[in-house]
Length: 327
Image 1 (cartoon, helix red, strand yellow):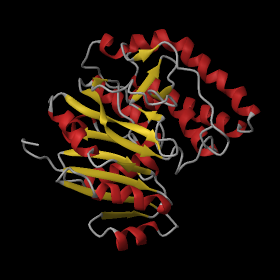
Image 2: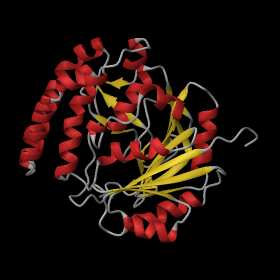
Image 3: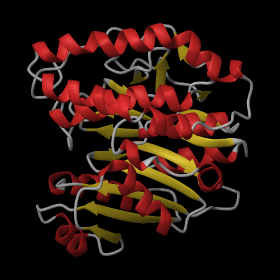
């Protein structure tokens, strides 16, 4: 790169993910990008993760937390000590390609209004299948990974503006984070990246997808798939995200879909044996509405600049087995 090289701080939040760390941290240590610091935030692991990192990756800065504070707060703790002008967040159950950071930084440097960059995430188990090319959202509040479960045939091969990045492998401009704030810690986990992307968008920042920034990811490697934990937080935060971030008229016109979706999922999860988790998620979501209303941000962009990213319908969900393995 024949341009000034900004320091990039890579924050990796970990919870009992020792088995993933060799691939993740080794791939970070082999980046072509020359100026990075790696910050490892351990969320109260009991599997010897910190001891392993301390022994095998001595250049990694380790922050030990006594208990699992969630993905949002874990990242915030790392970001607050980061020295970089740019902040990357990376899941512990990933392996990045050698030019991952270089490609993201190059894209970020093309436009000072870009505050977020999204990676191309592929399934570790099926490297020809897409896990994410950034975030998409519907008027019901459902958020999903763009292109998920599609075979990668180059259909997402161009740098393009999108709504926001999946925080499992994202790059953020620190200036944007200082302006809009960090991850909302009340979200704990799931949709905290959607909330952050919304706040960035409402403040006028852009996001671009960078197809050459490739990451391989074990889907559900840390939290599992359709566990009580994932069902509770994902379904609670779907409602909070719409209340907090949808521009007023978008929110008003979307209410039938928001209410319909939040009701429709109840029998689905009751039938699957997760009635307690889904019921608790909706009760707590409703209790949190006044707090989310109080946190609504004033938009600095025209409503149409947000509405263009909100799709009418979420795509039909592809199925995975109970164990989270791809069929």
